[in-house]
Length: 127
Image (tube, rainbow, N blue to C red; front, side, top):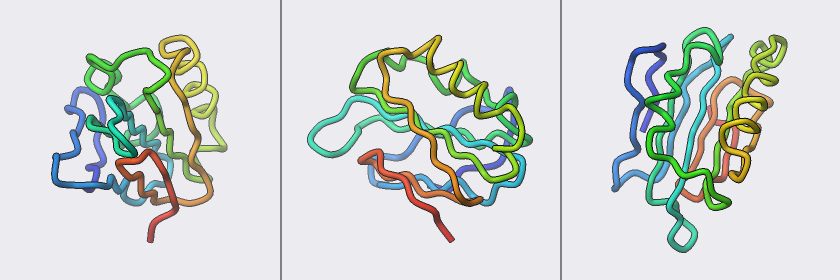
């Protein structure tokens, strides 16, 4: 699934059952957040993503995290481009995860402007 660049109140995108990856798409000042939960074997059964147009504040958190458990098995992947790392978006992401999902695993993906997150929760730079 390819994420669409959007901002609140646009709805979160849910990874279809037959798809095994989320591609953020090119990001300049944008931030993408992927949340995964309900892991069975190596794969997460529930995967949602949001490509926040213009940064972290553009993400619809109510839509993205609705029904997501604050549990050790939940994984949150924040994807940051070099431009978004130069703002305070990384601190906002860290604060949000620490406050609202302290039991979840929060991960920072950085180093490029387009990312791939698989159903296993692994991330890599994407072309």
